[in-house]
Amino acid sequence: MTTSKDAPLRLTKADDERDEDALARSAAGGQVGAAASTNILAGRLFGEGRVDLTACLQAVEELGAQVSAGDLTPLEKMLTAQAVVLDQLFGDLTRRALGASHQKGREVDLKLALKAQAQCRSTVEALAEIKQPAPKVFARQANITSGPQQVNNGLPPARTGKSGKQSNELLEDREHEQWLDTRATGKTGRADPAMATLGEIHGRKDGRGKGR
Image (cartoon, rainbow, N blue to C red; front, side, top):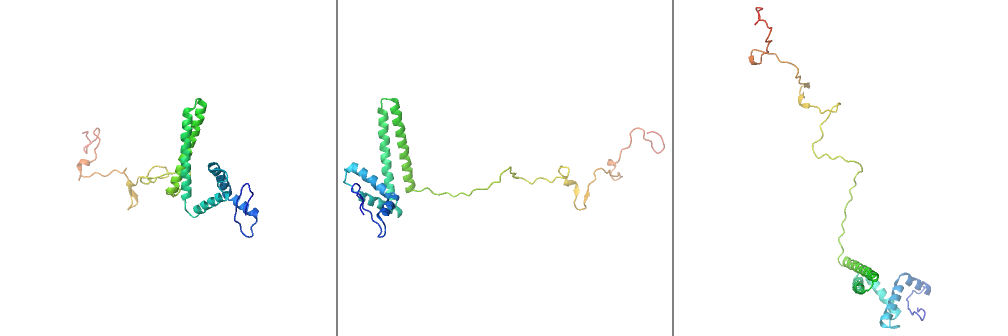
């Protein structure tokens, strides 16, 4: 099918497809708009009527099919061309800013130059990502319970009794289930006279009833 004379465009359609449906399908895909813009820009560069609109549409469709097949060469070329243009724009705006006679005009040109430089950097980064994709890192997320947590890095705490004091198990005889009684006094004997019990120094009487 062929469109109006002002914008000649030949589209292929199915046998049972109406012309309106074919136009809507092509316009919705974005390829017709890209072809129209390409045709206008080409006319400014090479002259009006020298580039066919249908040829522009076919070129856009071929690029789309190539990318869909997994060949990213057209995108790499496009991004490279954009980076070159943005770099040239940065240089041109910088030269205009340096030659401006007014401070306000110089600031505007410098801001635009820095924006062009930032877009150029982003374009180069996108191109590098296509050429050498960054490795993906998968990290597992640790679920940490909210609230205070207690971590024991040493020995377990000693057991405490009802009073809260630490029990002293060294005095306990586990074998006989008895506690050592430290209050009992041992009997003295002749076997160890040095450990004999001392008597009173004053007022003790001997067996004859006289004071010593």
